[in-house]
Length: 380
Ligand SMILES: [Fe+2]
Ligand SMILES: [Fe+2]
Image (cartoon, rainbow, N blue to C red):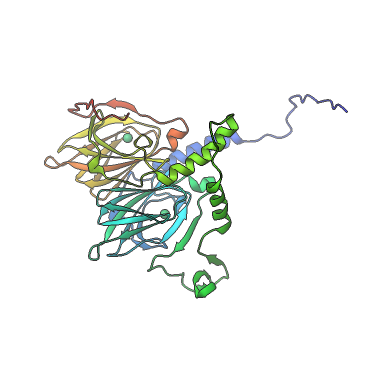
């Protein structure tokens, strides 16, 4: 029997929603909120704490760390950790990816059972859904690792961390009772008010992910768009298995750009293991400056050497070695080396989430003083 479709006419409203007003208010509140934060975070102002993974500092904070924001940066959080001589971090897995910059020391990663060595100045990249752990191979000296985690995974509902091995110094909260499982294994704890918390792998999730990995690969070319999407799963699994996990900056070229002397370390065009983060080193000559530019996306700097200042939308922010500089969305910025004798060096990390929503690239406003452009060494 044929059913007649009723064409619904626009009716006289009975209820009025306030979404537009709310979004205007939200925008105003967010601008006020962002403007209330400093653009430079001093290393010494952040305390060291012991977590399940590491002895660390939460430098750039946000909901991804279960902490309120401390800068205008939303898309990334940043930490630093210390690995004791011959020490190791906790072993765990999460969907969110992470980028590590080795500030001091030498050691290695174990990612899904495979070893990747690193030394001072290297980048280590942890791709999504990888069991990982960091090891310091030096029996006498500590290793120091700076790292960035994208902030978006919490909002996507995939921020869970599966803890497999706890850091040796980790302790359950005061008043909690440890819970022991099979073979007297420490598996979790019960808090004073009766809440239970368990470590370990999420077995149903692991089974689902293993089944996805084990999926038979589509033979031949995809016959339609749906098969193309099927093939993407196999291609991404294969990519995760083979992608390099470390970058050695000494093997990459400096480029003299309009923005200044830059060396790209992490970017999809360099075959990196990360999708949501890109990173480069920048050196400012003694008494020199970078170019001036603007981009929608957020940027963080870790100052590696020297001292100087940034101008962000006309406001000066002084920085020195170990500081973090936070450049919020849509900020005109330029970097200055205040030392007339020595170069300054910083690591820039930018969120690629802005690129993914169609707001990548830069609006270049002013060349770095004395910029002489490199013609060679550009990306293919
Ligand atoms: Fe991790
Ligand atoms: Fe920038």
